[in-house]
Image (tube, rainbow, N blue to C red; front, side, top):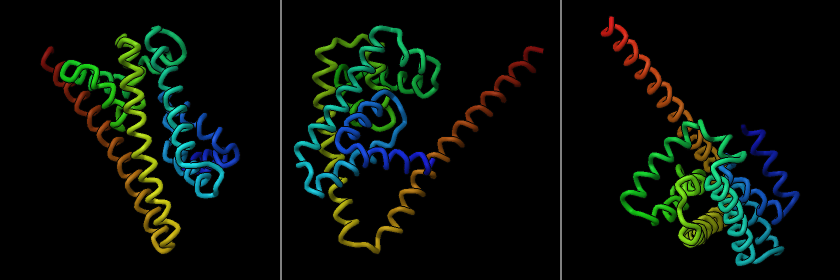
Length: 212
């Protein structure tokens, strides 16, 4: 996984802001790319004087919206690669259940939340399309959510970049902390899935014994 991230980072650095745009498009197609890499490369280009923060902000948002639109219309059509690829995905099913509950409670504001909340964001546009959310509502709240998300992500990236440059001694602890958090959360997700499967198997065994 670390080698994959390193290759993605090198690819982004080679292709510059066009690479950032394409990276954000793909990340919004429910592909588990680490979006933070795109923000880091964009900040590096800004710091080097190649782009302004405003132009980077516009490019990143354009990538988010392009990817979200492709995903939305694929879900709305009910066929195509994305729907076939994720139709049996447990992650999609869980995200769909969460989003449907939110739709029942909060209506179209769910689209806004879907752009801001990490664990459903990759699936929000696909689920909105599958639910046949009206295009105007989808684009309005997706635009607002993307603007807010990008602004906050860029703000945190700038803050982290300045700390990284100003305080070299924090670099190793920061990298270690990120690795611990990332792999800790990943391991926690794996353990939850294992426990869930064991509980389900235990329930099926009890049901079979009761039937006998």
